[in-house]
Length: 119
Length: 319
Image 1 (cartoon, rainbow over the protein chains, first blue to last red):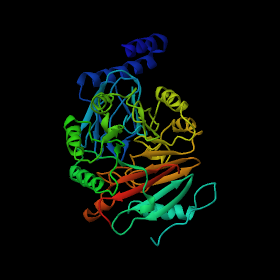
Image 2 (cartoon, rainbow over the protein chains, first blue to last red):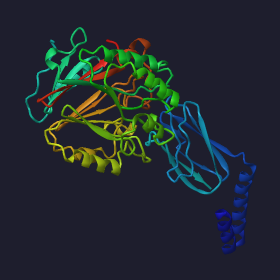
Image 3 (cartoon, rainbow over the protein chains, first blue to last red):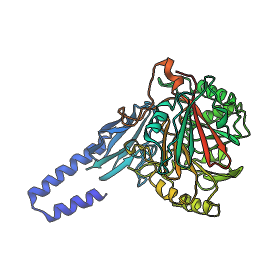
Image 4 (cartoon, helix red, strand yellow):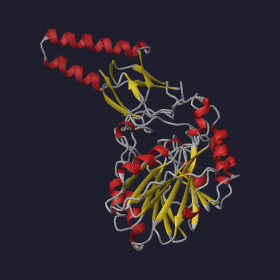
């Protein structure tokens, strides 16, 4: 919803060329969300998230897979998402519908941190 | 006893060479005696028994990091090695009056893992077992199950204190509500409770603090430390003898700082690498025949009137 409002403001306030670009950009994001199969994966190896930071389109489902012999979690401090303890080869997925920056960490080993940017 | 390290009479602390020698023995069966900030160390006798002179008024034991449920290459049968650790405790020359388990009872906080641990620990010959949780014991429920099983009479997330024969013991919880990018954490509620808990005690009261994650900064890159431990230790400055017992790092380390002696225990399940010596602090695979030399238990003697804790780390098997 926020995205649509923002795009509408941009359209109203800018020249036609720029406005068109904004519409195209917005449409692409909307299409990705509609398809619902945009995905990204993050692995957990040696007590770290790889890649540590990624940027995805809204609607993308991000999946974390734990390859360590130690349980880890994926927790957003703002409580947007929180996995259970992930044993070896367990995975956790979350679909990011809203643009924004989402920091997360492993609540068991808090020095493990990562960031998802949703555009 | 040819390897006696002469005590250092310098009141500032321990003899560095002696300390390192003791460190080298740790894990292979050494007896370390902390006395007023001075450390003396003796190798264990041929029978694995400590010298008679080192016997105290009472003994207690520490076991740690049992990780029941772990089944990977570093140790496919952690229940078997826990049982061996229990046999080691039961064979000690002076039976422990109680046992401290310093956390990571389980691998994944599963009910059946806690059940297996409980079943195994029933065979320990001691009056009582005291617990503090590790991060593996509070994975999905903020420690609710842990406290139902082991923390019925505790405060907050599971902290408590008790007195035994003139020694004040404090069990702390530093594995809850951890902050992104941070280390272990005690939190304000627990710190306030601790300050109040020790306020009324005489300065001569020996204090033993036990918690899962080390209360001294060993290697922050691996999370081996506690963010607000200095605050906790500031409440203990007035006491002549403070001993801090931790687990979490699956290896023996010691440090003496003023009136405080820090000690970490071996795991009963699997070893972890020395700080910075591997890509991560995860379980370390050692050759099968070596596993039992890097797992073990800790036996601690209190000697009345000397403010002394004699700490003996015994591996499950010799070199």
